[in-house]
Length: 392
Image 1 (cartoon, rainbow, N blue to C red):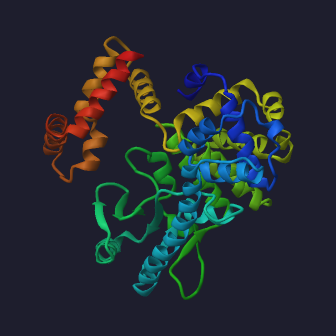
Image 2 (cartoon, helix red, strand yellow):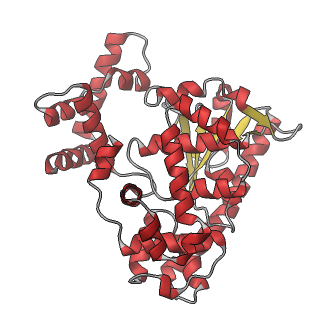
């Protein structure tokens, strides 16, 4: 499925090379040489780096080279620094509440990774993810609402979502992965507490070992990559983590990744990110053109085209490919539309809270049709899917 997508990728553009070079400079503390920037177009660089949530590190690199950036870009940098500081305060309140109430918790992804970047605000985040003892979900919900948060989702998936103006967004997880959509990944983490290390004796904050955190980082990236796609920031995260932890046990990592079915994905990404952000890459565009294989270039275009959160186009292609693989035959597009209107068993079992199977089916199908008919936002998304489907 992934190999099929790589065949259709466009060639890597000058703007992509420029973004890679500027990220590399920001990560490794080099001042960019304008002579190494190919066909420099500041506005295009801004658009591409913003889509990847890398505009802060790229903007700082340009400023270090004495290149002027827009007022909007300057504001992005200031906002990222401010947001990181304010998020720190909000997390401290939540951590204190959980410690007081003896609720164990595990900060995830960006919360930990940001501390490994070479400056405040360089690792941009749109939300904060925390795994916690879900037996206390109601108590945590009350705390969040008492502190001004609005409950967006509760008890409907593997994470509850809380938001508060102007930008706060917390995803509090009961599980690391959705057991219906990512069963192999979810099953691996069933007894997750056995993998956790307590941070301090007086705290209920836990952490992974360095190796287990890295395995989770790769597994999370693979989850997105295998669905909607994932952006360049995931490669930057992997590079930063490897760089700051040079003595990782790769024998253990490869064994665990093999259990998760992501051994090749991990190895390929590790090789790719080391090529992209190693010291030699500071030589500029020529290094990338000469050192990257054709498959690596195509994969890189896939990362750039996905954006940081993936895209509908990638998701639609993957869904179509999966369906054809499972049930080859005629009318594949029509069959896909029917599968979206009438969800599969694993979907309605997960979202409809009822133990009677035939009632689950009726409620699941009715809910999907009801949303398609009466909710404009959902209907527009469905129409967009159909248009994309028949434009292929």
